Length: 359
Image (cartoon, rainbow, N blue to C red; front, side):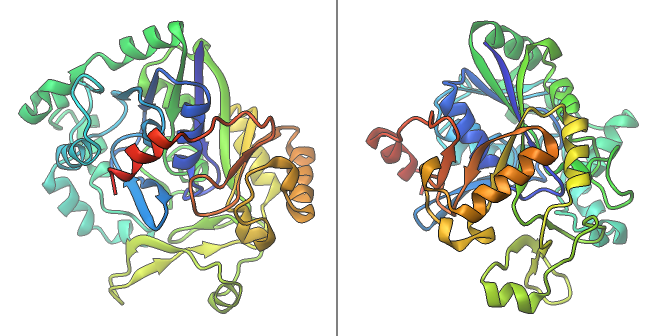
């Protein structure tokens, strides 16, 4: 019983969605919940060559057939919500939106696109920031006002707390700790706090129900837009091309019309990592994109098969933080993941068949 939370470490894009999906599956979750932000994050996973993504829903439902909840701390874009519900064949009985969620409108999105400050920080122009500001000014429409959302409306805090008494639930954070409006490098931040306490509050879960807080941390951290990456050296574009580790953002560069390239650090800043642990109360770490740190580990699915280089990194992270590295992501495919306790369930043929219906 209780709740586990998956949080983004540093500046986002760590593969939280994959970690969240596996955590929900591993714990036989009764429900997965979003508790902050809006439709700005992109959580996804690869099945063969197909990338399945969500912006509004938590991705934790993808392996575990459980209830899906959007808490009152999350702004909802009705258009994106309806698209994802239809895309993944989800019914109102399974998906619940809290009636107090602020609504993202087309006007909110247009306002963000006109704001030069939003472009500088690498905004996705989802309209979330403007929607949240309108909610604070008491001028935002709410979910209860939207006709298309009526079949999905419910008391999400009540649902989450009841399920947490019966079994395990999972909460899915958004973006990264140092993009937090409270704890990031202003103005290069998102519109809300994205640390674990705010995710809990945004779902409306009793904080005493929390069991594990897992922070997802890239072996080679990345960042969109402007802002510091800590006391570390960054790769040049030429170096990333040579190593084959370029990551393209979902954000389009307005000057070139092409997808932006994420900035990438050559190592983890351990001072910042410890601050992440402190701010989130994290007791577990998931290391992601290990195949970029050491190509020899690509596709590994057993802890004993991790390479010496990756094991040394795990030891360094654990000694620096005094927190266990419990999961390691080793490749692009969602099955490229290992658990220190070797407790990940097998993906059955039935699950794979269901996943392929989404392709």
